[in-house]
Image 1 (tube, rainbow, N blue to C red):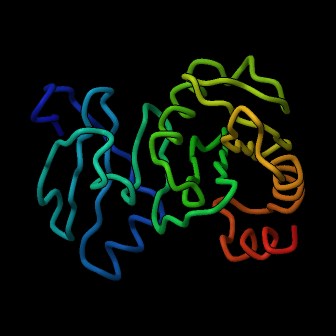
Image 2: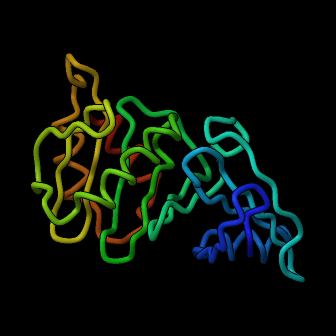
Image 3: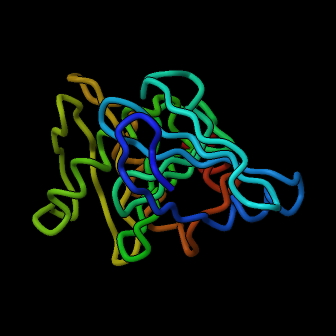
Amino acid sequence: MRCPKCKKDEELRLIQQNLRELSLLGSTSIASYHIDHTLIVNIDRRGIRSLTTCDPSSSLVYSVNTQVGEFVIMRSPTLDLNPGIILVDLREKLVDARLLANNLYAISFVRFLQKNASSMASRGIIRAYGIKYLVKSNEDILVAIPIGDAGANNAEDVAEKVTSSIQDFPPDICMILRMMKEL
């Protein structure tokens, strides 16, 4: 498809969650981040139903799965968690940002990741486009937690617990929420 605003030819990747929505509800949406705007594609069982563009900070895109380059960010359902958590499967180029209230944090982190994934340490503090993240990874999953200048109260504990507990991707959100209550 072609973006009506910037005329960029786009090939979007539907993830399992989109296919489940399509099967159960008859339609699904996916967004593609284009720096100064976002392309939103609505799909039904017959194919593309509509193409729309909007400002990337618009609340319209907060709960829509979003493609940023090769990565797909899962955003539905979105839960506001403190601290927020971004989970990344680098091999599959799949980002789970359902546990993060601020969509722009997820997009900024993925843009940083696209440029720096090979040189990033497996743990530590990074600064991506002015936002500080605590990053920890195991062999399969990278966990990023946005933190303020003072740091998140329990970000280290959360990152440790999540990286040691996740077996499958995308992870079971209920399992993560139970872990968070225990901390």
